Image (cartoon, rainbow, N blue to C red; front, side, top):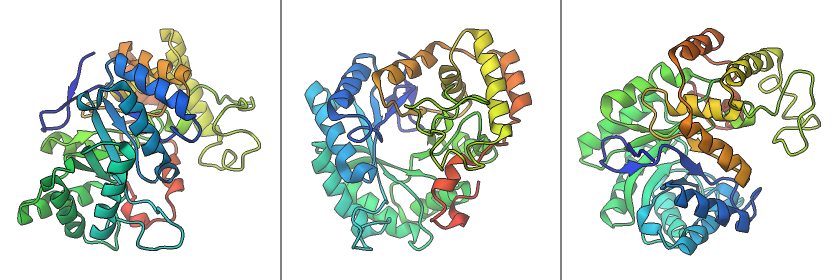
Length: 339
């Protein structure tokens, strides 16, 4: 496996990152342990979770799964902080100093580790000054609890603001950004990717299959299979942001390219993100071992120049077919998430 530079840190990470959101919820602990062990044996060294995933259960399962392999020191383990960890306490969420430090200690315990390789702000907050968060994160690095810090869903201007604050105050700076990026949503190509390439920021895009829309399960005129994330009787599936003629037509056109290449749409879509300029490691979210093995096939797929041209004609650079993931975070300040 060819490892990639994690921004300008000097750390080498696998070209795919295992996203652990399903572990301990839709994926049983035992199945999760099996996927973790298999991926490490295959050369994957990058795992990403968050405290809010099933309110700590994902971290517990990931920690136990890694412990069973005995290979913690060989891995780059990432988690995130922001989401609500209690329903009755408004301070048990956000990116305040109080919450960051409290949740870091809780994550360390759940992950059964002495340090977190990458600690990320899961979301920006317009009600919290970025220096408040950066000072807390800097203290965690100096205490040896965290080695690197990063962000998720930060707009380019917000990320640049954080770099400026770190420089002005002499604080450790963010080294990476996590964002949605797929063949159905290419908006990060406008500003975020050029910013990352200019300043040596690692990009770890999530949802290369657009939450499953590029999995090949959803076809025009056909019901979604029973094990699909979105089924016909699911009201979320019927929203215009998921089920409309343009999405289905674009997906069908992309599938024609994948079929002509002799590969599945899921592997093809993952390979496209994997090989885009500026991308470090796409985050894949396998729910089953079969899904994991499908994702791994992307490592052996290259996209030709002619295929890139066909893709650009279907979904032009910088554009998007659906703002799929934006809908899920509509309860946050929309100014923070407007790409």
